[in-house]
Length: 149
Image (cartoon, rainbow, N blue to C red; front, side, top):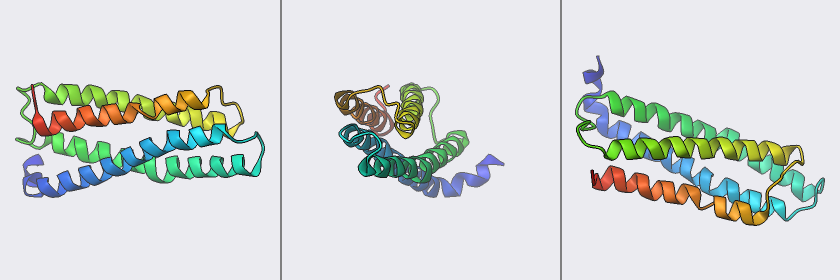
């Protein structure tokens, strides 16, 4: 049954790459919004605008892109011949994916804290956290393209 998808591997890879790019773009932008949100006064019109922007970014772009990335990635992983399971690069990629998913969950929690005016982190914290998806993305791309292990 799965072998019927072999002719569509390149299309599936394209879909996977497109959805990962959308997911990562959101993961880069959301913490940046948090940095700017920290600079606003609680209850201000500007703070309320950031709440809407953060909500829409997460619910309308990041979450659907993550879901599509997972689905397309899983489909690719079960097609025979796409991944050589005798190598180890895919394990490193999978670990990075789990960390990125956890980071996604943390961003969701931080957004909810902003939504109820209960943010506990500083602007500097979000500036540092904004680097996490970059490090993960670099590692994942190297694992997939170079396959060093």
